[in-house]
Image (tube, rainbow, N blue to C red; front, side, top):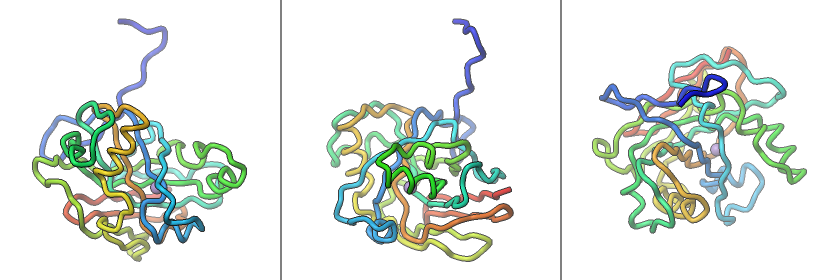
Length: 227
Ligand code: MN
């Protein structure tokens, strides 16, 4: 097949221990999945989580330098456990959800908080607050065949060595199988989809020159520098 213009490259992530890469199809993000973060955002923690998306080419790999984005004065980090899907998932039960998971990593749901909040207040879409260029730094993925399916472990984030987020993935309101199951009732998940599973409390702004390190214990770590 030929195209009238050059098609974009497939965004992808490294996979620990192998040369082949994980091709990224879509990025689904969960809003409000840790009670303390829901409270710091001024919303009712008992509300069910909801989903939004980032474009697949918002991916940046660990170690990258990313430019402070335009149109914001309040650019925030959110550290999150990320999940890679390996096969079609539609209306799956929580008890079967792990069968659809390729592996896990750590990601940053970078956010133009001022644009997100303005959209929230006006009942408008979040896309320009959440789905902009380079808004999804991600570590390499680690296969569930090797690390299993993590259900607990410290999730943390530092800026210039100072701890800003420090929680445990066991404190998610909806765990990974429940989230995957629920999401699969709205859309058909396909191989290559990534799920960013929500951030704990402690979100905050970064500036040019800042170095962010995010980690999920037993999974991975990622570094990114703002320039
Ligand atoms: Mn998030």
